[in-house]
Length: 133
Image 1: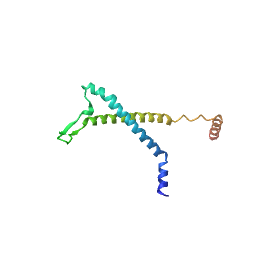
Image 2: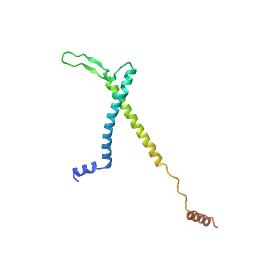
Image 3: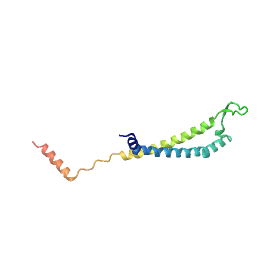
Image 4: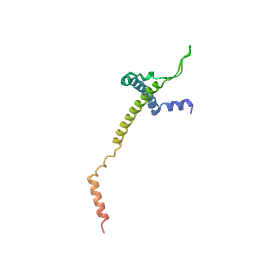
């Protein structure tokens, strides 16, 4: 089998397409969460902490000199990215938890059906014949 045919079969499987859709939706969801953290969550949090803007939190390792820019450690950006991650992880956890509970409800076995009147009668006849001397 040629490599192109193998690749086409691989790419056309349902799981590969599902993963591709998941990656695209995940990227869009990541942008939404980043906007939520940057534009909604962080401003009130910064105001509560005295007007602090987390993205501006830096530690200067080497001051600027002439045309050379300062070397800074941008830990505020890291804090913001960490909050993005925690929100995304919590949202994914909640979705998976909901999916598992739905799946568990679907997997609950139903009670076995009651035997028909004929089956009950045949079982009684069998038992009577079995107990006969």
